[in-house]
View 1: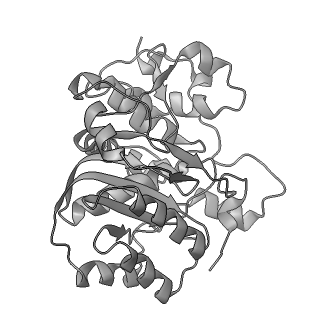
View 2: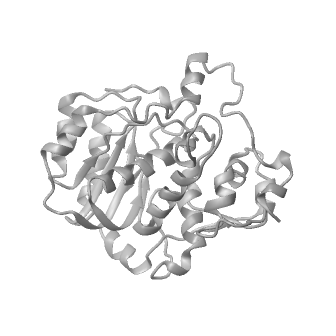
Length: 313
């Protein structure tokens, strides 16, 4: 069965925003155009990148994290990452475009890591329950690659999760990738919230991600794979294959390719994208998939509807 044979009602063509009279029209407009300004550069951050080169260009582990909260909270999040990881672990952080930080605050965030922190200068408007979070995670990896920095593995983090003990690097070196679980067609049909169906039948997921390197036919019964993204870890080479494959996948409408189209998908793709692509290619991963490292969940409101309107300074 080819993806083109899937009955039309099952291929989600749903609007990017469901009608909700409580959301102002101007906010809905921003929702539709979440990533149209991805080329907007925060010159303050870019100059910091250029003026303070790193003596090391290769790291065993990269931690990719995203935040939207007030400066004081972001400092705490970074402290937990720095305190419980080794000196040769690099951290790249995406600051939500909707949150305002002062020049002094940016300088302080940079200085915290003493060469271990990269601030992503491509700032995206990240929305709740939305593909823009996955896009910001992938943007972090693109920025690191553009700087000429290489790494073996990437661990995904977010501001709502903090490390609580050391040992992340040893754990990842043994297991190679984190454990995932399948989402079968029967489970997708029962999802009344429509989040997993939007991901399951998204064209690039059907034709590319769920098929791994093989972009031939993928039946509707072929599983998608999931896990919480906080603490999930994967090999760098597969992460970049995913990025480059999405960038090469042409789509219609307002987006040039599937990578940019992430910002037009109304579901939490960060729970499915890496997980599915890596699991489909699990025979290329060294080690047996293991659990995520110990984390503590910190509920900050980042997943509330309307949370993208926050503008703490």
